[in-house]
Image (tube, rainbow, N blue to C red):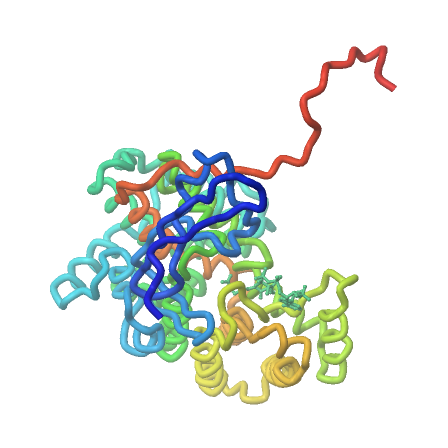
Length: 432
Ligand code: CMC
């Protein structure tokens, strides 16, 4: 069958049919270009963007049926196996993998910007000690616009690159300090002889009075977590970054909004929620009652780490993370980890259950990433902060792509209004 180039909307009254162009991308579904529809006096209705493409993008592609994830055309499995996180960040930002000279140059640029302005430490100190790291990150990333405002002209490509580099370089320091502040330990300055993943582990786990050498197996596992979470098409937080940025808002404000969106348990907060759920289940014998609750429509409980808006088969990131889980648990001698065993059993039961099978609800990346991070000694409250650290690479690439797109407009959805029609003001003494 040849691809359609036009679609026609017909109405069940005598209104004239409307002809609309059909656009095709490189991969994925065709889209009906409805931009001119408003001129005909109708809008489309699509809460949750179930069927709406909000932008053109050449960064990431997901085939939900096949369980395929591509960054700039490269399968995630190959990137996770062969690349480091900064190479993947470069790929997302620039569209191509760096050659040797580009990789050296890019790494040097990022490494040279890992420190925070000294006064930023005062911003951390304004928070309660028990503040959630995500709350601190939203505040501190937003406040970068009060420190690095010399290159915030979003219409200047060079300024956008400088801000993107600053965000990518400083986000590990911000995430690690959010944790150190919780603990009451001194902030560790970045150590630029370490690679990106090792440096984050150093800033999280080291203390000034002791030597700290990151374990290479754990550092590589951490790097994989970063690569797997680096971008994921037009998800809620990325769309938030684009929507906020569409008004010309600066990159730090836009990314802070993305972090806020990511925090929700239906999105990036699912890794923390998964671990809490596994602990609440506690024992294999109790899995049945939690599965029953997940299926009960009168109960708001959902099996965290299961399901995805786009994937209708196994999340490819989950498959990689499951393998990494074994590697990390073996390295740490935790083969008998009770939470991991529980997770494996839960996955097995859910994958055989008619409710989950018929709805194509498979484990997603968050189901395993939390287990890996817990084994590495990372506290639950940092799980989503680490997701935010990784996703910053995707957010800045998507934000830059939007600003460079000549078709980009301020995001302004329409609505189906269901409130009162026009009515006259009633003075208070006449109100019933
Ligand atoms: N447990 C139980 N039922 C579920 C679950 C779940 N985790 N996920 C979806 N369903 C059911 C849902 O109740 C609905 O059933 P029915 O058709 O009978 O009404 C059906 O499956 C379709 O679900 P939906 O809510 O319409 O799907 P969605 O695309 O709007 O939501 C989701 C996707 C990820 C928000 C959802 O699957 C969910 O809440 N999962 C748990 C949270 C989670 O793990 N999130 C991490 C996503 S991956 C990381 C990331 O990219 O952020």
